[in-house]
Amino acid sequence: MITSLSPLDGRYHSKVQELTPYFSEYALIKNRLIVELSFFMMLSAEKGIPELPPFTDKELKLLEDIIKKFNEKEAEKVKKIEKTTNHDVKAVEYYIKQKLEKTSLKKHLEFVHFACTSEDINNLAYALMLKGGLEHVMLPTMKELLKMFNSLSKKWKTVPLLSLTHGQPATPTTIGKEFLIIAKRLERQMESLKKQEILGKLNGASGNFNAHISAYPKVKWSSLSTKFVQKLGLTHNPYTTQIESHDYQSEIYDTLARFNAILIDADRDMWMYISRGIFKQKVVKGEVGSSTMPHKVNPIDFENSEGNLGLSNAILRHLSEKLPHSRMQRDLTDSTVQRNIGLGFGYSLLAYKSTLKGLKKLELNKKSVQEELERNWALLAEPIQTVMRKHAIPNAYEKLKELTRGKIITKESVRAFIETLEIPNEDKKRLLELSPEGYVGLAGEMT
Image 1 (cartoon, rainbow, N blue to C red):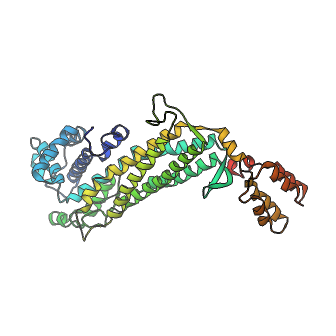
Image 2 (cartoon, helix red, strand yellow; image 1 turned 120 degrees about the horizontal axis):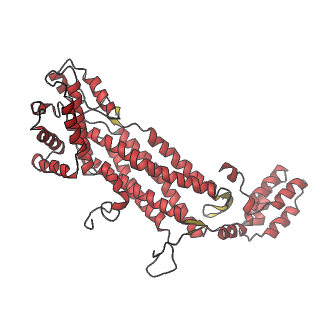
Image 3 (cartoon, rainbow, N blue to C red; image 1 turned 120 degrees about the vertical axis):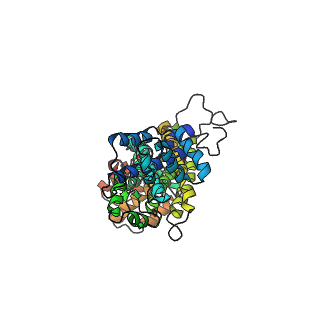
């Protein structure tokens, strides 16, 4: 919408809309509904609660259909109830009771949200949202990025590249090796996310099943809670206050922020490679690079990605730092903060797609690559002085420093110096055959 406050819901909505089933207000309400009804059904199956006999197949289908048929229109009904209750979780409870008011389950309505605190429902709802968003949107897109960097690494694995350390010409590498480094760094963070536990709890107002045992002291509530959380596909956290402590969330956001930091590094390097002429960008018909300079093809995709990764990390790092903190057994500061998880993920997703788009536009400029290297014969000072050291020639480093530092060095001057060296012919021949373009070490093999 053109009136949206956040660009994720306005300008960029089409690029991040696959996250809405996981992090929108609708998603939060639906997952609360799933938790409430799933627990209601599990209580029915518990033998130690005679007042709630096992539901019939018809009744179970009725409850499952409420979940299956829940849509945005139904979510609006919950929001309407909330206007009266001024409590979002209670609104879901009342919505369920309204749906069951004219069914055979009417007599069991008080077992909806039985012995639960709101955070029992909320922590599990957010856990399900995070699980779904990571598994179905974020990790697949991250995998696509990784695949692209690996593909380009293989494509250009033997193409030599002038390195810049401290912004100055340095020992050559290959383009493929540099792309592989990025890929391996990203892969490590991805693997951490894949292994990440997503925790949940259901144990009452202070984490001790106080209300539960006051009603049914013989029910093994701890075991029931573990079983329920695991059935949702989550890891049970038995030791909590009123809230699940959110440490696992902090771990997720930190890992995602590290992945993003690595990608910012990659975006900036791509920007520099384009600036140096190492890469050209495919021209998109109809696209404008500058409002006044018609010739420009700007690296806008990498710039867009860098900016959005910065926004994402600002949100993710606040979530990571804030959420593990809660005064005593509970305060409400986590509630409003968690509503912004979707923003952190959304800006990341937007950035990933921009980097992918930019990578797909890259075209190698071999001429520029070769010209850069040809201008920097002084790079061979390193292998020459290393071979001189091998043969115990005194002051090898200092002699090459005197020859090259701050001076214009040519192929001819380098070879003339090599000819003066009193070293075995085999080593001299190898040095004379060396060029900046061929001085790449094991970079190609490593890639």
